Length: 129
Image (tube, rainbow, N blue to C red; front, side, top):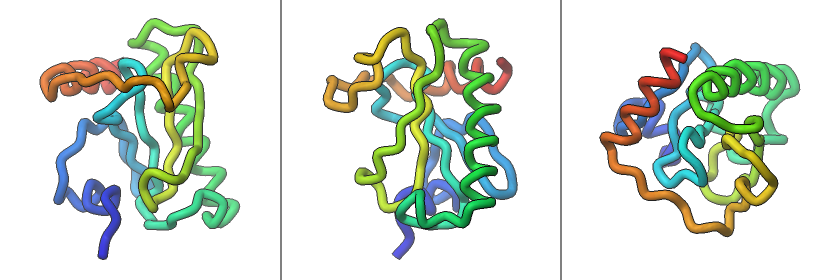
């Protein structure tokens, strides 16, 4: 059975897409820590990020770097924090979170609850950013 993110890749579940290539997809987290919190995933379904082959892992991070620059252009922050937790969804993914301090990337914090309209608006701004 396909994992949640594979269903997003296949268009079975909608997302607020930020960027896409043949190998990767970036979309807004629907329960973000901060506005602009984005997930970057390989389209190849692999559970654990360190099970990705070295070349794919490297390209994932280069793709994420470009997405981080797009977020920085739109969301006021000190920088983009990067986290790989790997327990929430059995599909390798990288969190890109706009941060002003370490506490902004604490996954035990209460998450924001943006509306679909708010997510669509920030996704559009980041895509254009």
